[in-house]
Image (cartoon, rainbow, N blue to C red; front, side, top):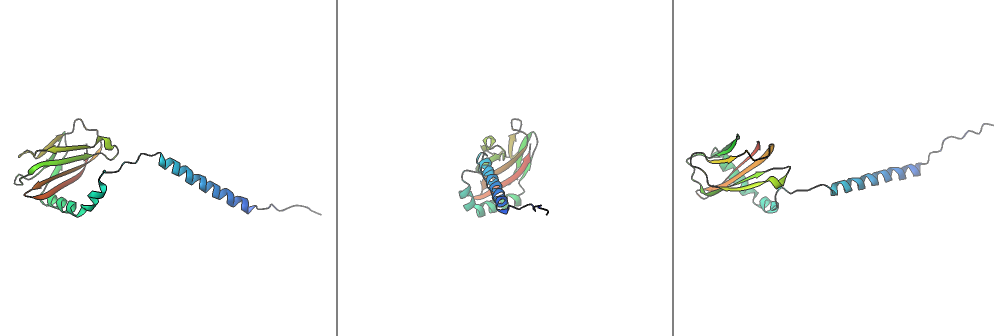
Length: 148
């Protein structure tokens, strides 16, 4: 008599192994995610979201006026000469990979050059430029992704 036994499948143990691997993988990912640095794009992002329609209208006015950015050794925001500026222009230069490098500037526009910002002391790479100002009581905005 041949007493060979067919291999037995212990399916209960295999299910426990699969679920244990899944649970350990999930816990490992959670532990990894908890150690990562999380930077918000802005401390007042909620207030900015509430003003979204105003921001879009100001951006459209800036585009319609022909405002543009020229990148070189000097970063220029070219504003048409016929546009009188009410007060100062607020410029934000944001670096997505390192918010500690962000710059907030308040600049008086030159009647001929518009806005000129030196780029010699800025880290090379991708920056986001946001300029906001008022002309004749209307808000204007210029946004541009720039490479320095």
